[in-house]
Image (cartoon, rainbow, N blue to C red; front, side, top):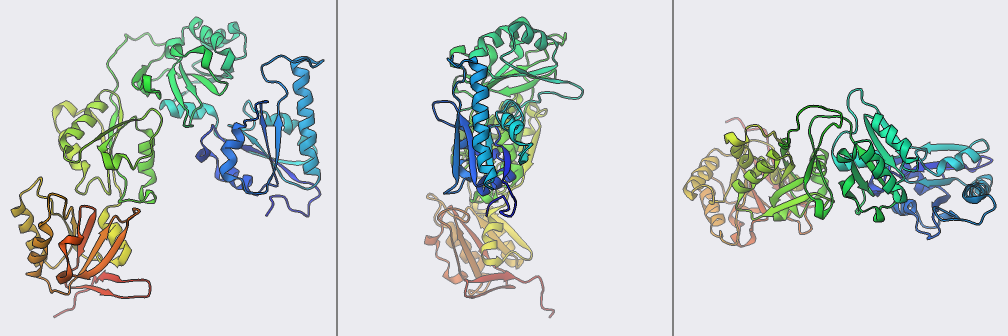
Length: 526
């Protein structure tokens, strides 16, 4: 269905802000309008490659009309009688006429704009020429300024500071003056202007505090100190950022050859220089048991903000790679060493996410990190724990509510505690008539504990007690079976399996959609 009501006389012009480059940073409204519009219009230079269309492509539908508006000139010379400005003005008039024809025919037109349509964008030229004749609406977008700030991981301005946005096309003397006076500044439109921008930063005494961000939010993002940039390779879609005066802040750089932290300090402060790095933090996160849909937004934010990831290789591999983010993967048996590494990184300024599957506080890394953090050398390092969905809840959900009443969680692993202790706890829980969620039931080196578990529980439970076997729940190889305690075959259980053994009040029954299991919250009064 078209955005434009066919009953109206003319179509509607939409100025679509697409954000800085990552298609996932397109707003919900912009994505909807792109998919509904009759005509998709976009600009490009004469090479024909449109960044805007590339961002919008995931939201376009087959059969949409496309208007490719190709600039006759960008930075090169022209033989147009009016020179560069004359050629550009003529192009805008012709482009406006093209779009006006669609609008007059009753078609809705989505004119794409990288960033925000009214922030150094070509859209504004069409708006001035068409908005007085046709209905027009602008959908704002995230600017490259915000994306660059996010890439740096530091505020541009705080409190009463003023942010100054400057085009790199200003004369060097004017740039120098404004940079000298600014609390914080960003310089846009780089490309060929970068040599004069760098000279202005130098003359203003701001070069050491300035950062260069290229193609922010995309897979080609780069972050460097402004003084380290090769001016010959600077694209138009790059900006220079001078953060405002602020407390010491660690900024991660996003290139392989500069993947370390620098310290940003106020260019105006006269306090003695302190080269000690700022303390970062450790956030222990739970990804959930398998599906990305089970990773909470809170955890996703922490992962996106982290400069370093620490964890078991299998869990680290579940986290999408991000430019500039360092990944410290290791074997699953070195929990204390991983915890110490994370705390040491944070002590030296890194924002560290320690990655666990499921919930980090359930047989996972939270205990190791908190225990290690009690060492006096880490006492000043902030540590947070963000919960995740644990495997017991995920498996239980697939069959109903087998954990609907009192239950216990037990790990069969005897790597950190003796089997005698494990056996005592199994017997105690079985005698207490509670459902049991069994973690780490077997591995390639541990193959006999499941049979021992079954035999211990059978001393207190009936052979027909329901048992749920959930393997790789939330993952591509998910399987869930319901059987009885006497049918439990240790050969069917591995490290990726979680067992739920019911209590005397646990009931299993069949339905057309599969078995259901619940543990009643009511006890029959004797």
